[in-house]
Each structure stands twice: as C-alpha cells, then as structure tokens.
Image 1 (cartoon, rainbow, N blue to C red):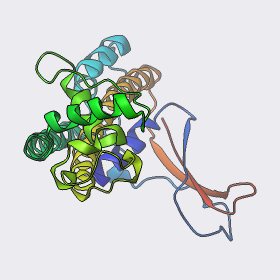
Image 2 (cartoon, rainbow, N blue to C red):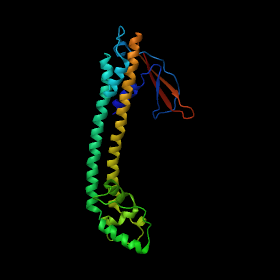
Image 3 (spheres, helix red, strand yellow):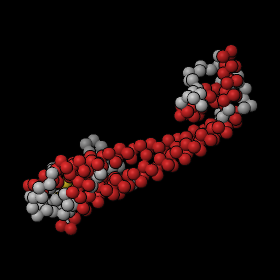
Image 4 (tube, one colour):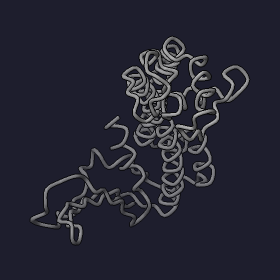
Length: 257
C-alpha cells in the first residue's frame, strides 16, 4: 500500500512545471531548500529521439480505460509499468478489504441473531407505552422485508433497543434504557465497527484507482505533447520548506519534460 501511494504521488506530479505538496507528520524544519537535482540518466525514462506523431488524445483515452495503456502506446513501457502497478495494487487491496469486511459483517449479524431477541424488545415497548420512561425515537425495520442494514445498525447503536440483548434479560423494564449496561451489545458494536472499517477502506481505494486513471491520462497527454516538441530531458526535484505558523516540513515533488 505504501508503494501504491508513493507511485501515485510521483506519477500525478507530471504536468509541466506542476508541483504536488505533501505534508508528513514530522519535526520542525530547521533548514529549507534542497538543491534541484536531475535524475540519473538511467531513471529519466525512455527519451524519444524524434517526434512520434502519435495522438495525445488517443493516449489519454487509452490511459483512462486502463492506466498505463497510453504510455505503452507512446512507447514508454517503464512509465506504463508504474501506472499498471498502482492499478493492480489498488484493486488487489480493494478485493481483499471488501472480502474481509463482508466476512466480518456475516459474523456480527450471526452474533446478533444469537444474542438479540426482538420479542423481548417488543415486550419492553408495551411496558414503555404505559409508563413512558424512555422516549422512543427510532423505528425498527422489519428484518425480512425492511432495510436489513438499518436493522442491524439500530439494535447495537441506540439505547432504545438495549433490552433485546440476552445479557440484560433479568434487568427490570423499570430501569431507564441509558442506565442499562450490556457487555454483549458493546462486543457487538466492536464487531460491526471492525467490519465497517474494512468496507470503508475498500471504498476509499476505489477513489485512488480513479485518481490513478486520471493521472495516467494527464501524463500520457502531456508526454505526447513533449514528443511533438522533441523534448528529451525528464527531471525530478524535491524541495523542503516550512509550513507557516506550524513548524512542520512540507515536501514538494515536481517533474518537467
């Protein structure tokens, strides 16, 4: 994942004269300004000897369809490999995290089916309708025909449903809900949060894949233009500077054709 992010940062910083700012968690900066340095010739990419006549629009469209395809079209396989590697890592991570999240979802739902009793909760509702001890603000969806995601979220999230958990079966309905402690409910919420964390990671990685496609398309388009102009040199520079009023390091990466 670290390689994925590092590769994407480098490749997205390819527009002529463009810079990308990265703010790491770091110590206060004592000195600012690293010398601008050119990459060794072995890392400067495949510099063309003459204009290829290939279309920047075609290259951009190819890279939008598959990151790196536009670079292959332009004859720079090493650059294509970077974008293709990022694409592979992002989707492998997506399927891994989504699978893990869905497995945990199945586990916490099975746990709820075992330890939360809707009949007991309905009995509390009848009691509460008479004594008005707790203000009911949520409506529990039908487990079969309603919103099942909301069903499993509500029973753990809101105090209103606490009397359905089996470890408080001996607690009297006269006790106000927010004063009832249920370790089983707490354990359930932890399981549900673990599942949601992996599923959110999967959603985030999709956004990274989209950025990779856009970055590859922009890079391919600009590289095609550099071929038309006959430019050869590809330079990379890094500059450090302090962030005003914060004393942290700000690293700026840039490339130029």
